[in-house]
Image (tube, rainbow, N blue to C red):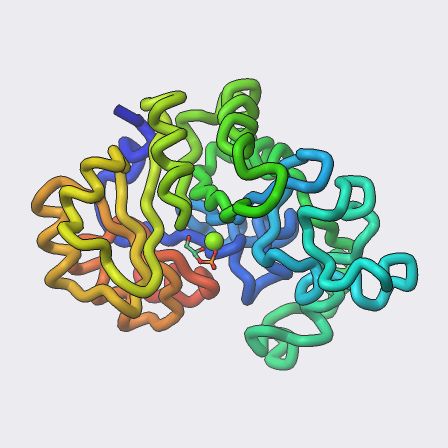
Amino acid sequence: MSDFFDRFPATGYICAHRGAGSIAPENTLLAFTESRRCGVDLLEADVQATADGELVLFHDESLKRTTDVAERSEYSDRSPWKLSDFSLTELQQLDAGSWFLKTDPFGTVAAAEVKKESFAAIEAQQVPLLHEVLDLCVQNNLPLNLEIKDQAGTAANGIIVGKILSLLKTTRTEHLVLLSSFNHDYLRQVKQLNPAIATAALVEKKHPENLLDYLYDLKVDAYHPDQLITDAELIKQLTAAGMRVSLWTVNDVERARYFSAAGATFICTDWPQRLIQSHHSA
Ligand code: G3P
Ligand code: MG
């Protein structure tokens, strides 16, 4: 059994979704360091592989939304700019921060919650290596909920799990990381290769049939459904049967309280600064 959950004996821990996308550009080192400063209990990040097999943190399949790739003339013939077609060297030349100031995805720039003094650091953000965030986690004893993005159709599909596990081993972070995925085959592979690593099944639109049996068969340590398809009753049933449940993505303070009271382990949020304050004042 994994010891990842030993550090989470209660409910309602706050998890920074993509490193807290309302504070800084999602899945960047700045987002992870800022959400740590804000006092989150753990980070969530998305991992994918580059064309040359390097593990990087990035959410979308395409680089378009959260980098300046579409404005770069040298990449004009690479549309739709799939991350899996780019090498690490190419990726590291992209600006992964300025889009945040331009599009202000959570309105925190206009509201001056993001301070002008941070703009230069935001504009300097690059796509980080998984390794860099694992170092941050070790230095701060901060756990990571690492979501393995579905690599189907790319060269990394058959090797990403093995690569992640070797990196966790060499960085001695196996106890600090929970591996989650919508691709449940990856979770099976994790448990076959190293049953001591904690896993969580992500589900979006519909709960699988015979849910508990399904989760037991996958040998997962936790269930992570979309909050939109989940209620307190389900959380109570599953936790009574020994299954940990965590929700994503909960940005409403009352809704976070509701799930925590029902027994949810983590609340994955874009707004940890609001939820932490509310949990402390509750
Ligand atoms: O970990 C849950 C959540 O991150 C899944 O959704 O699309 O934000 O990666 P997404
Ligand atoms: Mg994710």
